[in-house]
Every structure is written in C-alpha cells, then in structure tokens.
Image 1 (tube, rainbow, N blue to C red):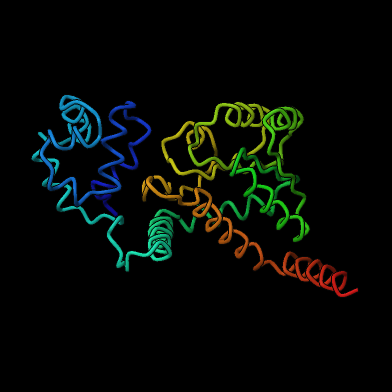
Image 2: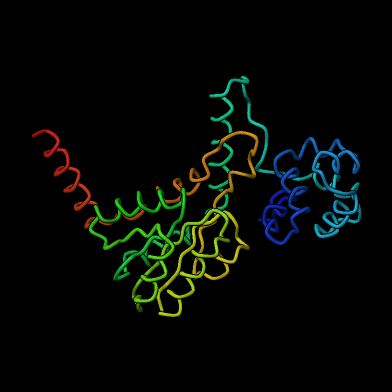
Amino acid sequence: MMKSLVQLVEYQYTTFSRQERKVALKVIQEPRNVQKMSITRLAQATGVSNATITRFVKKMNCTNFYDFKLQLAQADSVNVDLPTKGTIPDDVYNFYQKVLKATQQLLDPAILKQIVSLIAQSDRLYLFGLGSSGYTANEMTQRLIRMGITAFGMTDSHMMYITSGIMKKGDLVLVLSNSGNTREVNEAAKVAQKNNAKLVALTGFSKSPLAELCDLSIIVKNSNFVDNSRFVNSQFAMTYALDIITTMLLENDNYRVKMDQTIEMIMNNKLK
C-alpha cells in the first residue's frame, strides 16, 4: 500500500536535521493547519528559516512549498481529527485512539507470527529497556515467566552489557526503545548479536539504528507524532503490540495451562 505524504514524513523523520525535524513534527501533528500556512508563517510557527523549509520539501521530493501543500491536501493521513467535546478526558481518549489506529496499520501480522515463533524456540529470552521502556519490559517479563518461558528483564545498561557478553546461539533479545537511538541499549544489543543471539526491536522508528541492527522489528506509532503539548503515554503503543504477542503466545496450550496455573496459585494465596 502506498504511503501518504504524512506517513512518508514519519518514515523519514530520523534522516532529517534537527531544524528540519521541527517542520516535520508540525506537518505530522497538524497537517490541515500546515496546508493553510504560507512558508513564512510555517517558519515562524516552527522557529526555523524559510530555507530550512525549502530543504525539507525538497527532501520530500516536492518541487516547492506550494507543491508540498498540494500533496499534503491529497494525502489520506492516518492522523485525522477525531470528534471531541473539548474536555481533557475526551482529548486523551482521542489521542489514544489515534495511537491505536496508527499502530494497528503499522503492524505486520507475518512479522508478529515470526517473533512469536522465535520466542517459543528460544532457550532464554531477555528484554532490554531503559526508563519507561524498562517498566514495560519488566511487566512483559512477568507475563512470560508465568507462561513458563525463561525470561529476564534487564533495565540497567550495565547489566544489559554484562548479560549480552555471556549470550549464545539460541538466546533471543527483545529490545524496547521508543526512539531506537539509545546508545547504551544499542551497544548492548550489538554485543548480544556478536554472540549469535537473535534480536527483535520494538520501536517507534523504522529507520532507527536499533531497527536497522535487529533481525526483526515491530514498528509502533510514536506518541510524539500525535501531540507534544499534552501528556501522552509513550508506552501505550508498545503495550498494545506486546498484548498482541501475549495473546498469540497463549494460543499455545502449554503456555495457556501454565498461565492458568499461576493465576490459580496467586488467587489461592490471596484468599488464605
């Protein structure tokens, strides 16, 4: 399926300069407003020069800014406005709807199936994540352990590096990084790869160093592309993707039985 102009801007986001990214973010977040702006008005709104915008539209294979706006108007972007009553709960709900819809369109069922197969075949599964991605990695690790899968959550860069040094063929690393550009995480992943471990990325950028390093990648919607003026959980799209993987794993009877056993054990312990 051909990508819309907004989707192409997202796809190429990591290749833009720092100033060009300001323009790109405005285009992704407010495509309809940008269509109504002059090049000078957009420059003022993003804090860049007219020349920066000209370079940006050239990178998007547009003749000039007018041509860029024409293509933007024709684009069938996934970042469409959703109905809102104007309340904060409505706004947050709409942001999450956008993230979910866009992530669903990015996910490749065939890739997800391959990843589930890799998890099932792995000797040991490691989940890497720093900061908020670390919390998500730990939560997913707990799920996997309850299914009887040998899993370890690594949320400290030093431990990631040490653990990567003792990995071997048959090990699998699921690396969670919204940016895909966290140096410590990527360096640890490189060490794991040198030791013949398989790598799977869960990230918001398909052209990030992490995605290019890994054997397989799950690309999710980057929440910053939805709205950066309000809080939107950066882990929401990742959690959605991991929920899908969990559901696919639980189609395996052995994993389902072990999960049920742990649930029963926990419930019995709580009732004592």
